[in-house]
Length: 132
Image (spheres, helix red, strand yellow):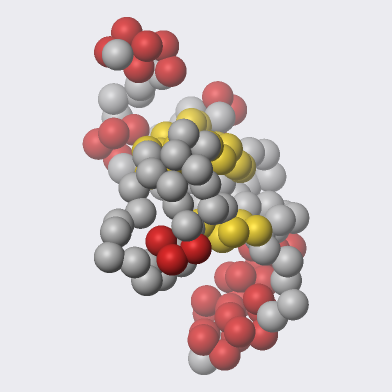
């Protein structure tokens, strides 16, 4: 998610199975929902050798692996640096996820990772209650 001064998106993952280390759980990097962290990662992505730059950028950073039991959930500000890991299991990692847009970012030009055709539906949590 692109940097914005105010939160724009919040994402919730719900584990539909136990998510063990071999399933490639999401890794979160605490304290990275900052302009400085986003500028640093932008520099990594623009580097001539992004793999070497990424190795340097992430070396020594604290991270949290989201190993979850079935039914557990994570809820996070999508500006927080995060990534799924590689799956070393014969089982797939199965999560239900839902992303909420902050009311302050209702403009069509707002940063988002939501597919445009889904965003165009302008669904709310109340809509899901009625649909379920």
